[in-house]
Amino acid sequence: MACDPEPKPDPINTPPTAIFNISTEFPEIGVSVSFDGSSSLDSGGYVAKYLWIFEDQTSKSGVEIQHIFNKTGRQSISLIVTDDGGLSDTTSQDLFLTLAIIAEYPLSIKSPSGLSLSYDKQSLWTVSDKPGGNIYNIGFNGQLIKSINYSGSDLEGVAGTGEESVVWVAEESLGKIIQVNGDGNILKSVELSGVSEGGGLEGITINPNNGHILLLKEKDPGVLLELDDQFDVLLYKRINFADDFSGMDYDAALDILWIISDQDKILVKYKIGTGVIEEYPFRINKAEGLTVLPNENILFIVSDDDKRLYRLALP
Image (cartoon, rainbow, N blue to C red):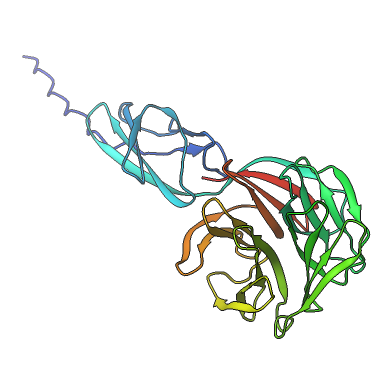
């Protein structure tokens, strides 16, 4: 008599494997990033669920999703996949979010260094740090409007004043700040002791609320100085929150300073008396000057290496 075949054991369900791809190597805050989990595998069945977990513990479902980040710096995202048998697997990747570059414009200026708004806030000032470099007025899209025929020794910073075509410039190797008018004539010259040693003066900006001049020494050590309207030193503060300091701008609306480091590629929100409030990484090489459009969350950065003007979005 024939025997009934023995029943075959149920196949063993094995866990799936979670895999995902990201649409960009350089994610930016405020810009949509796509995540694709379709490469995930399940040898014994199929992936039934895809759950994405973000660092702030928010979550989204779906094979492919899009997400907009609103915080710079390193963040982690995880994908949990669950198969038709209820087994799961998780994988994670770290992202490094930077400030979003809205636009970039080529400049016809050699080694641009330093950036400031004009007196009417309708254009920008920059300088060339090459020997004999001039002072330049440029538009928000980088076009040259005019130049001031001032032959600089080693110009590293510029600050617009409340007068048309009158600016302050920082002469790094001379250890001086010099006020120049639109004809290239020197109106004032102030020599500062100790600022040309190590890394010299890199940034200059003006607090319009009191007329005080703020100066930034690059490194060895990094120093923040404040001068009153008689050029007496009110503040001499060593700062070390970056490897170097390459530019700054005073934000009168917030009563803070924006400071950049070209080596660390960070923008720092800084308040005198308080210190560092926030840091924002960016991906611009040799950032040598910055200025902020008041109340518009727009930041301009000028790059020496790239000879370009960048427009970025502040958080």
